[in-house]
Image (cartoon, rainbow, N blue to C red):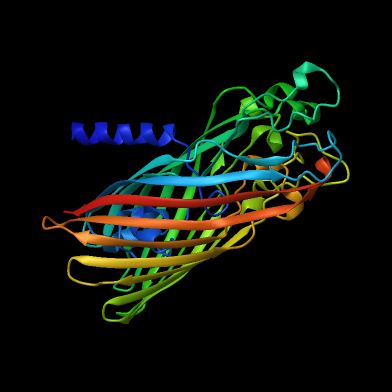
Length: 424
């Protein structure tokens, strides 16, 4: 037992020490290699303990399991500032700039234990989302009109948001067809920002905008789920996660709206899986992420009268609520080998005129292509591998703070995840 406690403590420590970059806005496209290989279409699949992050009702039917793994995630992101103004007049120095830090190792862990024939308790630990950029220049160097050196932008410029969750799930079969689940969630997040000194001029708390090291926030919420085994072929699932109410980032209360508040948005999933041939299963999920419900994310950075940053109406990233459509396919090729593939399409996270602030978080990818496989071993264990590619997307336009200067932000991604699981 001591060995497992130490392993769990190490996993939590590693989870907090790496940036977690996400793929739908700042939301991950799936949880665990099985889900990720099917583009996250997992709410009605019930094939692993990590799927509790999508639908805790599935745990009552997956049995006793332990799952552990890690992904190697590689986002390429940056911005291009166009040279369409007279020399020296462009608010942002013209050029194409790519962010540093483009390779991240992200672990996960999940376990499920059947209390009796109809109920189970499980745990899942993983990254819920995050953002990371680091530009090796003072991006906002021309934003200080006062000449006062305390407002001169420093280098590097960027932000680092890390998030992780620990979910403890209880799931119960109500009858042969229906199961329900509930997951209290503990969430921890950290944030730091550098190179934003000119924005102190626009803040109600100018000493709490940038360069204050890493601040940590704690909080939690609840996820509930339902799974309906309609017949031998069709499953229908649904889940809802409340907003995760977080403590404020006090060291950055002059940057984020509502004095440093950065809650984690509510979201819900609805989907089905259908066995249309003996060895083939199709799954579909619809997910909606309510980004606009968090002022620091949803508030606009465009308006006739600029609000003070850090105030209730202060600048945010201007993100809309996001709809994500996920399609997955699973083929039981043989007794030992399972092949999977998927595709997802997300709505546009923000409008073109919101591009300036999103230089710090260019989360513009909308499509994900995924594939993977599972290989069953002799000792009731298995290896699962997933691959993801998100082709480059960009959002371009102008912004009131940059006048007529045009430009765009862009991002592409790839990821490989390997997981080991065992039944007992």
